[in-house]
Length: 291
Image 1 (tube, rainbow, N blue to C red):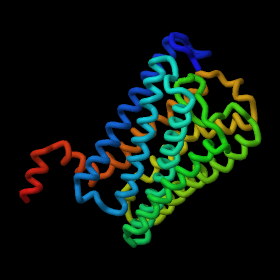
Image 2 (cartoon, helix red, strand yellow):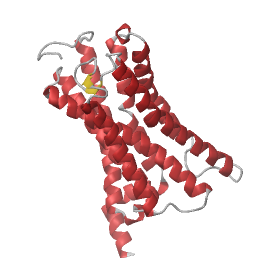
Image 3 (cartoon, rainbow, N blue to C red):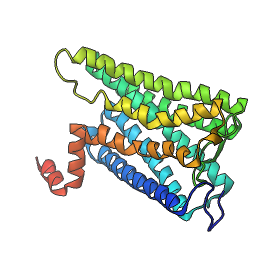
Image 4 (cartoon, helix red, strand yellow):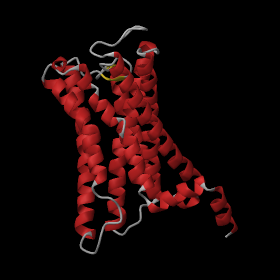
């Protein structure tokens, strides 16, 4: 860990400042958009539906990712990790749990949309609540395992944020990586791709699908795929052959996912967009109450 007043190994002054600034912009953008989405869900009765509960779960998890990025941005601008080893474990757990919840919530939304639009059977509250409960319970379970010894949390190359330690290349890391990646990245990605592909096949014959069937899968693949490739490379080769600067690129890409998700699932939905506008327009809310 870099001491106060010193630079992390492999980084210059402007590079540390650039990383901290990018993280800060991503954190504030994701946190503001997802917090606004959560506020509108709480204040607008029209949005309190089983299908929108899944979107709310995604907004909550993405807000957690943005809070995690905000801590990383603050530490990067300070050029050191000020929270100690225990703070690193908490930061790693919180970040990993919300990342897994975000990925799995995206898959749950894809399955829910297929269920709604292609089977013509509305998603009920019991199913939606069960999905959300499973997503968060599963995410907390996998995020707890490194605290118990299967996997390990440590600082990233910049030394100002904590995540899974991919520098060890031992059997413990490799077994955890491949098991975790299958259940929490490949399987959700498969569910997302198949759900939207089936929607395209079924609804494309009668017209344009009512939701974006391309962006969710691409967000998962290009948002979290670079992290997956970095971890895979670390499991089979010496990750120190990759420069510390390049190792930070997947983290910067991933921290932009909450903003993309908010634009796609909230601002891209007519009903949610209308609810956000009502939250931002007190006069419109008053007229709606009078009507």
